[in-house]
Image (tube, rainbow, N blue to C red; front, side, top):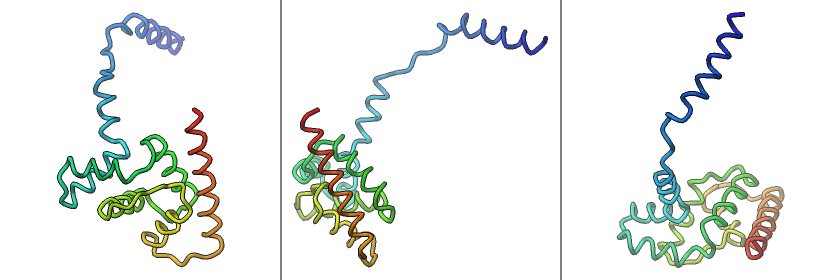
Length: 149
């Protein structure tokens, strides 16, 4: 009986005091998301390498071929399909490419092979080649879907 009274009391309390609880500040949430964007992460790494913030942002804009959302999807796909790579490896690869002003297309097979060779320090065998090839195909599909959406 006491459990029922407790549950009813909690239920009525939630209904009565639900309007008194503070609302979530959406501006703070939006600002937090924008500062953690893909381009912002790479820009921050470039800034850590000694570039001016504006120059770092301009380099990132010139190097990355796709928008943040698509690059983030492709990065997640790479991390899922090629488990020996870490998020930091991809960010370092893009940072070094931006320092050399080389464009980065995360759906390109050649880019993925280069990424694995430089940051995984692993021998590339047939299984790894097939993982890279499959990831490249999936990222190409993501890129083509992004055009139509």
